[in-house]
Image 1 (cartoon, helix red, strand yellow):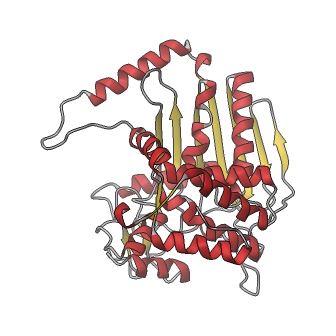
Image 2: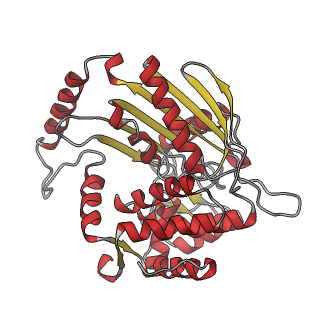
Length: 366
């Protein structure tokens, strides 16, 4: 609960993370991009993908799984498409570059699409989709990920949570921002429940036998050791609640992000060498942008977006419900509140950040 959290302000937290990345050999501009992605997640209330992940990057850079100075190359390019090889570096800087390329191609030609291969975890998908908004473009971002999700009727995890994010500009209303995993929940949500020592809702995950479980620690340990089980696709187990739809979306993300770019896919991601040491994850990303005025005048589109949102929000509410939300609305409101009041960190996360600071000689006085 936030009342039990450690409250930190945005700017000191940013500077701490930037210094940590610089200590790990990341150039300042890339350190700031990576930090911005992490802190934006925390501001928007997506704590599972915020600075709680900093240890993951520190360990990845230490082990060589993530490369501080990768050889990033554009390997294929046309007027409206491109593929970038990330060289095993951090996912955030190359993804920022790729989305900028997609946006520029959209501004020049109406639409642009860029894939990335040989990359690593890139943070929240919505960050990159939202980059298109200020250019009056619609943005899309997706990535494959570490093997965590059990296919419909399967027992072992074979796919990632494979998120999809779409952002569309509006007029007076907030932009529409859908940022979703294709699993019932992302792994980070299990980590949050584990830290809080809360039982998982039935339907989120299975144990090593393929049966539903509420034990977050058990699922996380099984995923770590690949003992079986994992997260369920969006919709849940079997066919009753149509979990095969989430399963299909996850496969689609693998096709767009990995097969199209030449990245690893399914359980080929996060390979290890013969000695069992982790290698760069070799995951892939997909980014796209469409210029709204390539289809209709921007003002007309934004007015229609406002009308659509108001019609949905003003629709009759279910009994006991006070409000109908539009995707992204809660996150924009949370970001405004946390920017003013501070970002609540779980005490275990705050303690880990302090430990990282002590290890690297970075002052944790935020």
